Structures are given as C-alpha cells and as structure tokens.
Length: 325
Image (tube, rainbow, N blue to C red):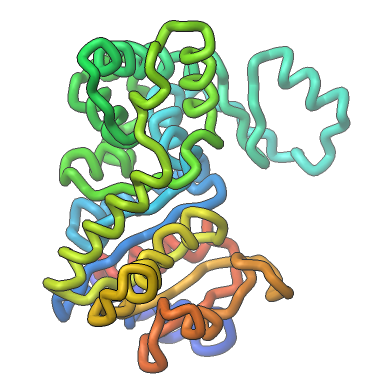
C-alpha cells in the first residue's frame, strides 16, 4: 500500500456531488494547515461512541487539529470507551427493537446509543468514581476547573490505567491531554457526568457547585483564547454535526467583533460542516454556510463546504486524506 493510495482513490472516484465536496474540503483543509493555519474541530452527536477517536487522536498527535469544541457527551464518552470498550454491546438490529426490548436493555444496565449499548457500571460508574475524587479534592482546596481540565487530571493521574480495555492511542482525549489542547465544552451539564456532578452537589458530597466552571466562563475563556490565537495565524473550523458544540465556538468571532468592538478580529479562515440535517427554516444544524456570513462568522472569500452525509463515514476519510494516507 503506497502512501498516496487513499488520496489517489479519492481523486479518481470522488468527482461529483457530496463525494466531490468531500475531496474539495479535504484538500482545502490540508492546504490550510500546510500553509501554517490551525484548525478547531467541533464534535456533536455521538462521535466518541462511534469511535471517531481512532482517527481524531491521530490528527491531534500529528498536529492537524489544534483545538476542540464538543458536547459533554463526546468528552466523557471517549473515556467510557477507553475503560469499557470490550463490554459494550452492539445491537445491529436496533431498528427492530420493541419498547419491551429497550426496557430489557435498561434492566441490564445497558444504555443504548443507536446500535451500541454503553454498560453503566463498567463505563459510567468507573469514570464517576475517579472524577468524584478530583471534584472533592478541588472542592476542599477551593479550586475551580473546567470539565475537561478535571478529565485531564484523571488521565494524567493514571488512576484509570488498570481499567483500560481499549488502546489509549485510539483515545482523542488522551491525545488532547498529551498536547494540552484547548477544549471548550458548552452545556456540560447536559451529560451523564454533568448530571452526576449535580447529584453529588445535591447530596452534599461536593459542597460548592461552582467547583466545576460552566458555560459563560467557557465562552470568556474561548474569547480570550481566540483573540491571542487568531492574532498569530488563521484558524479554520471543521464542524462535525451541528448543535451547541458548533454554534458556541464559531460565534466567538461576532462576540469579539460586534459585542466587544474588536473589529480587527480575524474571521474564521476555513469552514466545513459534515451534516445530514435537512436545510430548513431556523435550524442551525441545517443552515447553509453562507448564512454565517450574515452573522459575521465567515467572509465572502472564506473557503466553505457542507458535506451532506454521515459523519461516521465522511470524517475518517477527510482525516485520512489530511494525514497523507
């Protein structure tokens, strides 16, 4: 297998429609980072459960991804996979499940995400135990950290290492921790560990609910970070799915330019979204990239693409192209 095998395949076969857009977006991504630009990737949906970490971790380690905005679910589910991968249960016939079948899965402690069931005890409770110790330690010291910073601490401590049943090389969170990558997690409370933290505050195990920093502070950190980072080089935006992970991060530019009157703030220098959301009235996930020009996020000359397809198929192909496979 030659180094150019995948690239040659895409160039030969991906010539029209969404396939052509995939190739155009991949080539523009490669050009952007090769010429010194940097890239923020946003993760919505259940990309970590879909094991996007296999390719995303490699992109991070290769210096092709430089920041991440993700939902709380994607943050934690990468670690769920790390400690419980071999105990996940695949349900290939998930479209045929009856309500009674679903209740049976619940009774077994199996929480379904499309065709995959996450084992509650081995995944969620394992991570909860490790995080609770970090939350309580910070609580006693009066420290306040962001959700991803607590997870970085857990990974650095090695407390979960004996529970690993997936290759740490396939964990994008492990790669992000190793690089100390900037990570932004809007709406973290809408996640299993966010719910757990609220529960531990309610039952008194954690005294100060402010121990874990929240969304407004994340936005402030994002604004400070982008001001510095974009002054050095052009930043691109590679959006997987839609929702809060994408909109939260991309709107930092109009925040700076319009709300803080920092009119010299650079626009995003590249944009691509992978989404199978139907273009519709009022939907962020289904909005075309051109709409973002009117919000002061992208410019008329910004390379912009929307690949209307399944991200579990498309994202690894784009990443493989950028990695030169």
